Picture 1 (tube, rainbow, N blue to C red):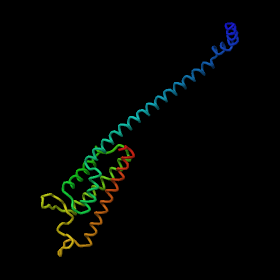
Picture 2 (picture 1 turned 135 degrees about the vertical axis):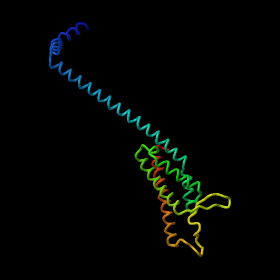
Picture 3 (picture 1 turned 90 degrees about the vertical axis):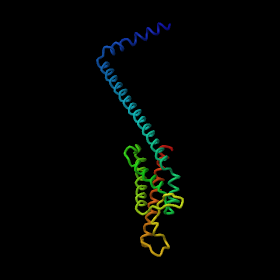
Amino acid sequence: MTDLLLDLVKRHLAPFVGNLWDSLVFWRSVGIAGVVALAAIWASRQRLAAWLLNVGERERARAHDGALFKKMDAALDEGTLDLLRNHDLYNQNISRENIYKILHFCQDFARTENEYIDRTLKDAAESFVSRLRTLERFVAQHFFPTETPGGERRSQFYPDDEVGKLERTLEQVKREKYIKDLNTLIDEAWEAYQRFRRSVKARLQL
């Protein structure tokens, strides 16, 4: 019974199939559809390849920037910066070792080889290093070498012109202006570091 039904269906469809088989329009349509399908597959492969390439580049950039931040943090971490601003610089008396540490940090991370790939991190890091370098230059100009009784080499804000001396070479108005400028530079450098550190946390989860 099944064979009989299949035979009837074949006989019924035979004229239509034969017409399609011999139809030039049909085969043109099939050819066009095939070309479109191949083009779609090729475009998809290109998009997939581009996406995979972008993913790879992002991962390499993330690894590079993560390693660079760890290098920066090892050279001058947040705790050291906080101590410098709230103790040494606040008291206008800083160790020579810390001055050199800041100087070498600024020189090292101003180099092109130590640039971040991520634009947000690059801009934030450059802003921080620039403001820290401005602060370091101010200290180099207005702090002068001293030495503790124990032999520690330090730099002090105009040590020969302390408040209370009868004979002073630095006018009070000028001294107050310098101190105000120093405090402003300290605050700007710290705020720039905080912006940079928040960017690192958001972009690198570090």
